[in-house]
Image 1 (cartoon, rainbow, N blue to C red):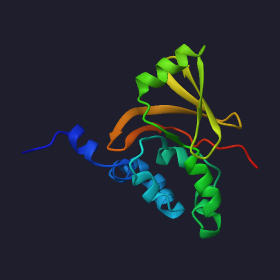
Image 2 (spheres, rainbow, N blue to C red; image 1 turned 45 degrees about the vertical axis):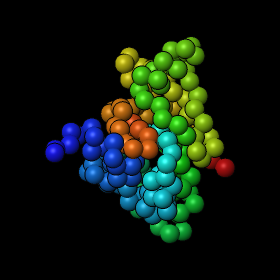
Image 3 (cartoon, rainbow, N blue to C red; image 1 turned 180 degrees about the vertical axis):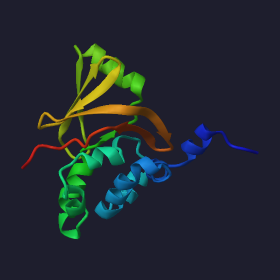
Length: 160
């Protein structure tokens, strides 16, 4: 029996789905470096706002390579967990929450900070603690332990 694409995706957890998509290769490398594979492979559910390779490429030269150094593991973990929200929030629920809260909806991240979600036309926009913005470019990538929304920029938690 052949599986449909959606049933295959449902059997893969967030890490497996991301690893199977070449657009997330930088993210997968970062997740492995930070030691978050086990966490993001756990039952969840999680919503991951996943920066694409192009999103990581927008960071200043040398940022990604320095974050992947063993000495930067804590900082990398902080940044990556800022992109994760506990619970499964598909695009329709996100848009509904934004509309029900006067156009802005704050979500708590696993890292402990907040990201503000809003709409610009039909696009969901994330605004980080520093005012940086990212746009959801692919929504509702299904995984067995949550959902992935691809974003076009890396969002950053507040500096300590």
